[in-house]
Length: 591
Image 1 (tube, rainbow, N blue to C red):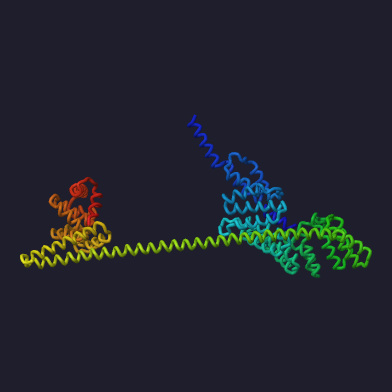
Image 2: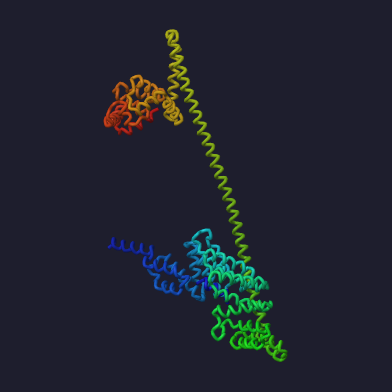
């Protein structure tokens, strides 16, 4: 039948020994480089020339192939055999392919493996198992991926449609024919898409919707013509000639008969139709009978009986002659051919066919409902697990967020406290120094009070030094305090224009640094006796953050001299050796 043909078309020394073993292992794991181009070539041609693909694959031996190459060869070989209409008598190879590609294959490879397993079940007559395999194949397809094998997916749905046709589930058949057509269009396989569309005619006809059936054929025929397939158009139009005759549309029936006989390629020069299509003789006989050309009608009815030896053709020829003799009013001949027609279609055969179809429908219904129930249970279980996982993730994220907010708030609060404490120390020191300045006017009378004020300054400086040693927040305040000073901006301007600072400006820079960085002040005060004037100025400039080139300009010395001087200062101030860069880094950490 056309549907089956369609789907078959779609489906078209120690050291030495160690190195030797290592090489063999590498060769086995990597596979055969010689075989790879052959496998690639076979994959390219398997659809258009499956016989050549089989020959190529048979030229490769499994020995020397990696496991993946072996399984790829087997997948391609089985696919090519299927396209060559091989009848599968066992599902062992196909199950092996499914087991392998379920764990190691791409979505397209998994789909093909399940499809071939379905083809094996189909050939073995196990329709429920075949349908389940085709459904699994369709579920493997990744239709979002641009690499999706839409052509193979179309074959899967076309094969499912054929199973529904065999089981007389015609509406299901139509649904899957449409899916098959849709994916054929996505693959830009126009002919296959139109052939899938044409199969809807059978379903509509079986459902008794003759007008819809005729519409499908006429529409698909026009599309065949549009896309350059006139032979297919003529063949399809031939399928509705009988329906048009029964509806009395003789003119249209005659036109379609003429085109069918001329363009289908089924009729030879002697007006004989190819074997397997003899039923057309009855159709043509009926056309002549309805148009009162009785001699021509009898000729084609008898040609049906003579050339078509199977049950359907014998039945069709006898029915045609019975109708003819009824028109001719020859009762004996009417009775003779009517009885012969009935004998070819007895009730025992009809009953057996009905029971077979019933069993197949029951098997399908049970399999489908069982699978749907299992799938629903699995989906419900997955949904419940997903809900619990989602809740757990939300709780975890909420806990992390709360903890983060708490830590952040704690850090902010700590920073705020440190800033307040540092600023308070600065204010206290400044205010106390102002007080001492006033008290110095009457030094003898205020000697004890001045001593208390100086003690307070010492305590606050100790607090400030401790903050600057441990807390980054305090260091940032000190840095900002220094860089906001006027003298720092003055030195920056001098650095840009190459001007040398005055003596008073050096003193102002020292005061600004000492006020901002008390620990640095302590270091410099303790070591000022052992430092030369140039060394002292270099220390101030380095702590102020100026680059070595700027330092050399502002003290009037060569860069190489400044580099050596900083190394010497490392030894003088920190009693150990180090590079000039290490000296800069260490000095800038002293607040």
